[in-house]
Length: 169
Image (cartoon, rainbow, N blue to C red; front, side, top):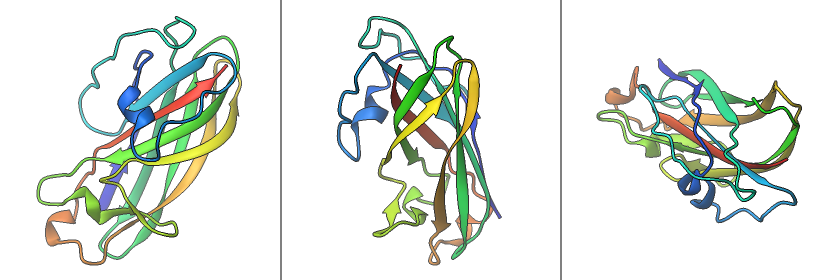
């Protein structure tokens, strides 16, 4: 049984790689741009120092969980977004990319959309999600599956997921 467990990880300001890969650069929203990142991988994510577009160090947290995947099965990655700031924000993009556990390429983990999107590539969700000050809200539910042809090495594997995103506020 595959288990992916997300935990929010604080990262300051510039998450350029996650915000600008895959689906292209997001359009700059009105107001300040705030970056967020999270991970389901074990161990810390190194903070990326730097100011946002407004010259402030602001963050938000992204987390998500999915479990019960086995070759040929489908499940849902339920994301949530936490705003630790004292003012509301609107999440404009969330990005997801998976790393490969030993012996199981992340190309076996697929976002079940049309056409399917393998998570060895960055998957970008464009949305307008309002998050009140000092609050956590449910984010998008992402349908995921494990390829039917995945090898035995994928049984019980934990795919490290990395989340990124942009917001205005």
